[in-house]
Image (cartoon, rainbow over all chains, first blue to last red; front, side, top):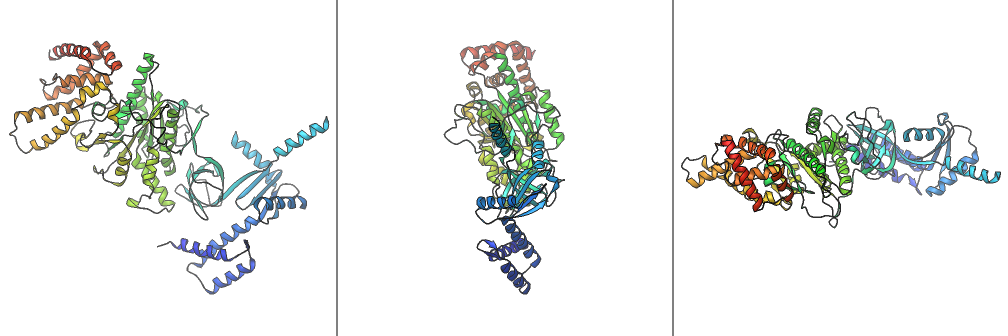
Length: 131
Length: 508
């Protein structure tokens, strides 16, 4: 017998697939699915919704790059980053700026599981690890 | 000029500001040395991943939306939400001669307090075993120094010979004796200056053992002067199961370095029962489907891929493996013992009853076998011990029958008498391997009936006295036996004269 978490995971994945339109998460579909889940409660609804949330969050993170920066970042740089990532991943990527003084200087870009490290703090850490 | 410099400076600036791409994930759960990770979409099977705080892990389970990793190192600082990054590398350990005489952990880091190990070479822990074409048949001996084994269950370079038996039957002692004997042979070989001499280096992998036992083993090797030719890989019982799982592969990687560099090495896995238990623990935590005795389905592959790495390579060196398996109540038909028996090229079975009777090493002749080693046995040993195994097996059978009645014919009595003398002759104290030339002398004397007139209780002492006599007074004859490795009429005449002289002194 499959465990509860496995069943919940399978259902969440099915719901997640239904949330996509042209490979991107559709807010309308997500709203519809949440409405449906509220009316037709599955077994372990919290577990299903948590797994669903994780999948949607991971997909959204794949299309929105978080650009952490220590100093000021112009819109032109953000646009250039978005264009470069769109070309690299062959899907539309938008950028969200997030100030992070701990980087000391430079940028760190998060997109899904990938991290592009071009900060002074990152280089210092790499140097310390290699020593 | 300044334009050119600016161009170069721009290029340097471009390079130094180049972004480094990392693939990351976050820890979802961490328990019992195993972490479940979200993300790590680029991770490969068996790839090393970096945890915060310097701990590293190996990706073992690649699932649709999570990755299961075993963690090698301290897990106490890891928590949910911590970032994990891929490294793009397979787990590797340091290799080379600099490791000889050192005790290291499963990752090759020194644990003996003798400072850092000066080696720049690394080998991957997991490696595909050599294929058919590059292998060569086993034809050179590995002399254990244990008379019962070298004469009846010979081991060859590149062979996998299992040492199996219940707890406290002397399994580790056989392995340690073998390592000590290799060191003794190495010393004699190096001293002889023979350019054709091939030394044998040893690797002792301790899995799931008590730290006190490992310390005792190291002390025994050091006392015998064998540590300088040995690498100790320690994954004691206190280590997490991931380290215990990886330790035999790390040892194999170190042994392969010798094999690939035209040298011979011996590796002892002590023991694979505990290794299987550590792997079972990891698999259960990773929620892999369990099978017989709750072991995962790939427990056979766990050991087969490890032991297949022992080989003799054409034009290169060899790696001989002595895996150890602990049985429960002598049950060789349990899951892990049968698996390893079927993988190896023979087994040395040690019996509790024999051990308790004082027959040590407690080798059961009937259940022990060497499938390829006889091709590697020295001709001299074959000449003096060719029929021993059969005679001893016959003795055991007759001894069992003779318990039912006392009316035995003369022939049966003679066979029983001879058998019990052979048993006495094979008794040997621990950590005291006998050089092969002295083994030949001892067995030749037995073959020629030099112990027949002695009381049974005195046979062991007589054999010891004979060896001492030869060591002190017949060095030239021993050297001839060692170098020729076969008995001819001239050597036999010399043996007869010497044995007669010894008999006179011993009887007196």
